[in-house]
Length: 563
Image 1 (cartoon, rainbow, N blue to C red):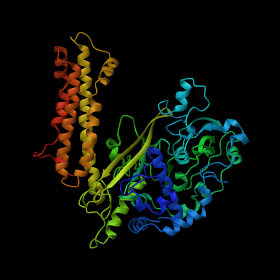
Image 2 (image 1 turned 120 degrees about the vertical axis):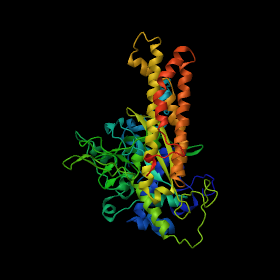
Image 3 (image 1 turned 45 degrees about the horizontal axis):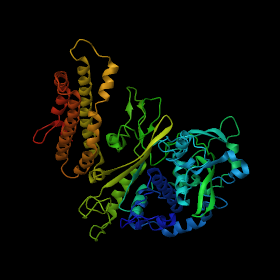
Image 4 (image 1 turned 180 degrees about the vertical axis):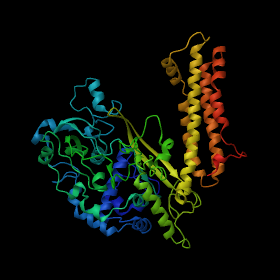
C-alpha cells in the first residue's frame, strides 16, 4: 500500500486505483513479474494504447481512463473466472476424471520453486519426497486459490523445457523462461504501469489478442497441435500475446475442505508451442527483455540472462542506450555483428519521464510522493515532477543450468537524473567505471594465480601442473570477495554522478583500491606467514599493485577521466 503496509487486493482494485499502492510484491520474484505482465497486458487492451510516448506521459500525469478499464473488465469478466466454463488462462475439458488420470498432477507441478520438473531438489518437495522414497501419493499441503492463481501465471511465463508426456513427450520452454526481465519503477503503482506501457500501435493491436479475447483453448485443440510428426507452432502477434502466452495446458481442480475451497491437484499437459525465438524479433520483441549483440555475423542477438557468478551491475553498460545500437562493420560496409537492444521498457520510461517533466507546470505546487526512500522532496525520487527525478530499475529472473532452475533472483538499481538528462554522458562514465573495476579485478585474479603457482613450486624444484594451480587459486576467495564488496559502492557511484562526476570517479577508484586490497589480504592469509608463503606473496603482488597505481586519485590530472 502507499502507506507502507502490505495487503492482498483484487486485480480490479490495482487496475482502477493504482495510485493507492506503492508496488506489486507477491513475495516471490517470478510471481511479481508475472503479475506486472498481466497488468500491462490488460491495460494495453483496455486502453488500446498508448499509441506513443506522448500519450503515455499524459497518462503518467493525469491517470488512466478509468471508464475504459471498467468497461473492458466487465466485457471479459467471465474469462477472468478461475473456475468458470471458460476458466482464466486454462484449458477447457482438461479434467483427468474425464480424459485420463495420467493428466492429473499435484498443484506443485506448476510451482516454479516448489514442484516443477525443472526445479532442483532444493526447491521441489516432490523430488525431496521421491528421494526419501515416500510412498504417500501427495504428502504436500494443498494450495489456496490466490496462490494457485499466482503459480498458474508464473508457470505460463517461466516454465523450462522438459519431459511432460501429456499431449507430447517434451514441453517447449516458456517464451521468457530464462531471460532477465526489466521493469522501470515509479513512485507508486500507477507511475510504474505508465512507465512500462510501451507504445502499442494500431497495427499491432488488430492481431495481438490475449488468451481471454480468443476462443478458449480445449483439449481437442491442444491434441490437434501435437497430432503430427512436428507440433503446429503459433505466432505471437504482439506484446500482449507474449505477456500471456499459454505455454502449459492447465486446469485447476477446486476441492471443498474444512479450510474452504482449495486446490490439491490439476489437469496438466503441454501448452501451445511458440513459433520463433521466445523473446521475438524485429518490432515484435518482448519489451521487458534486453538483447546482447550477436557473437558473430551468423548468429542473432540473444537475451541477457542472470548469472550465478555475476550480478547485473557488472554488465550495466550492455543494457543502457548507447551501446546496444552500435553495429560493427567490415571494410565492405557489411555488418559483422548484429546489434543488441536495450529493454524497450527502459527506453520508453526515459522518454515518458522527460515528457512528463516538461509537461508538468513548475509554478504549480507539486505533491510529495509517500516514499520511504525519500524524506525530502529535494532528495532523489522516482517521480518526473521531483527536483531530482530518478528511475529505479527492477530485474527479475531465474538462474538455470542444464535445463534446471537452481535459484530465483530479483535485483534493483537506481538510474540517476544524469541518465535522464544526458544518457550518453552517463553511459560513458559508467563504462569507464566498470572498465577500471574489470582491470583491477583481472589483475587481482592473475596475482592470485601467480601466488598459487609460487606456493606449489615451494623450493622451485618442480613446475606445478596447471590444473593444480587453477584448483588452488579457485580455493582463494580474493576475486569473489572483491566483486561482492563493490556492489553497494557502485550503487552509490551511480547516484553520485548527479553531483560532481569527477569526484564520483575518484571515490569509486578509492573503493576499487579498498576492495582489491581486502581481497588480496585474504590471499596473503591463505599463503601463510612462513618463508614459502611470504616469498610467494612478494613475487605475485606486483600485478595487482601495478593496476592499482594506474587509478586516478583526487588531485591528480588524468586525461582518461575527461569525458
